[in-house]
Image 1 (tube, rainbow, N blue to C red):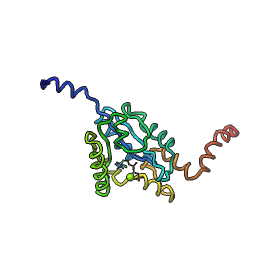
Image 2: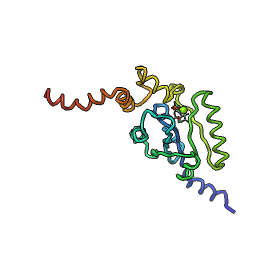
Image 3: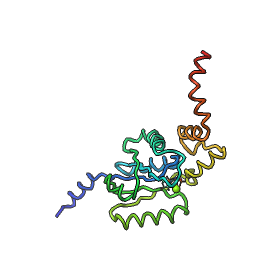
Image 4: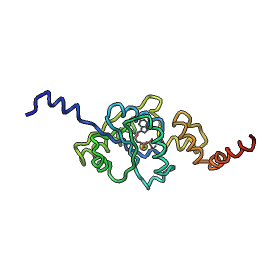
Length: 190
Ligand SMILES: Nc1ncnc2c1ncn2[C@@H]1O[C@H](COP(=O)(O)OP(=O)(O)OP(=O)(O)O)[C@@H](O)[C@H]1O
Ligand SMILES: [Mg+2]
C-alpha cells in the first residue's frame, strides 16, 4: 500500500492536460479570457477547433488556427489543434483528463449540462470543468460578432485587433486589396 507521503508525491507529478473545444468562428476576447483562466489551472491547455462542415463557417479552419495561435503565443502551456468526431475520442487521443467549457448565461447551462453528462457517459474518467468569463464578456459570442460585423457595427473590444482586421478583410475584400497596394503607394509618394 502507498503511504500518505508517496501518494502526495504522485499527485504532485501528475500533469493535467485539458482541451478547450469550440468552433472559434471567429475567436473572441471571451474565448481569450477563458484560455487565460484555463492556462492558470491546467498544466497544459489545448485549444481544439472543431472541424464542423455543416456550420458554413466565416473563417476556414486554417484561418481560425492562425488567429488562435497568434492570440495565445504569450501562453507557454497553451497550444492549438483541430479535430473532428467526438470530443471524448479526441481527448483520449491527446491524453487529456479535462474538458474546459465556458458558461456565460443561464442559456448556456442546459446545453452544456447535456453535453457534459453525455461525455461523462461515454468517457467517465474525463472531467468537464466550467469557468465563467469576466463580466464584460458574459454576453459575448462568435455569432454576435459575426452579426454585428455584417451589419456594420463596431466589434472593437469584442475581439483582438488582429481578428478585427481579418473580419474587415473577409467582409470587404476591397480592404485587403487596398492594404496589398499600400506599400506601392507609399513608395510612389516617397
Ligand atoms: N464570452 C464567452 N465567455 C465564456 N465562455 C465562452 C464565451 N464565448 C464562448 N465561450 C465558450 O467557449 C466554448 C466554445 O464556444 P464556441 O466556439 O461555440 O463559441 P461561441 O461564442 O458560442 O460561438 P457561436 O456563437 O458560433 O456558437 C463554449 O464552451 C462556450 O460556452
Ligand atoms: Mg456556441
